[in-house]
Length: 247
Image (cartoon, rainbow, N blue to C red; front, side, top):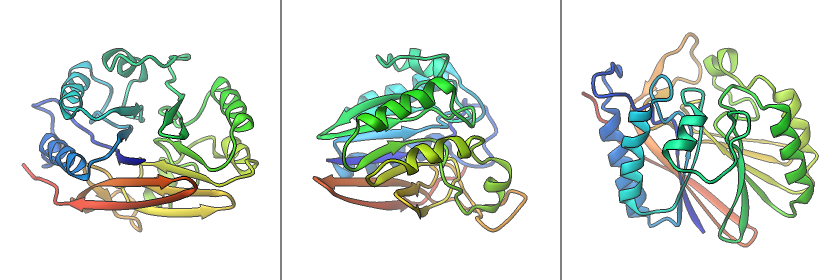
């Protein structure tokens, strides 16, 4: 099974100020890379919109994804609206109190998709996660917008970290087998390993954040996708960068 992960597209309307970044061309170029990589599935882990969830932007993205003709799954980020995404992308997953979280079988692997677009998880979602972990066996793959472990990016860890890490981490640490967690939000490439969790932060399709600076500072404008491949218990992941486009 071969999956491509994209995250933090931050696509605006045509007349939106995007700080000199051609976000729409970036998205089209990264989709071309996805097609070239010949993946079985595409996962978008949130922040599809520049500022906030927008029906027009979601429809523009959906048209391009449908044209790509690769099955895909999506998550909401903190700049999204899960209810709007559920409607526009015609998703058949349950929308629970405006949270869009679900389990999906990809190849022979069950993957969990979390909704932490409000920087945390509802009690309902945590109870659901606990049930999923109890039922699961073997290596587990989770997709999330926010990192579950601190990401080592000064500005983001100080200002924009997940607010309920103390609640969700113990649930995952109690799982007896390895967990591979793929996320975004931090606009950087990182691999962080703690206990049984192997967390991979994927760079943005917008801009990358300088990991050692606070307040916020752009590190560079190269954009990226992550490839995830597994065969039985063997998992391999890598990041491909391409030049981002400026206006």
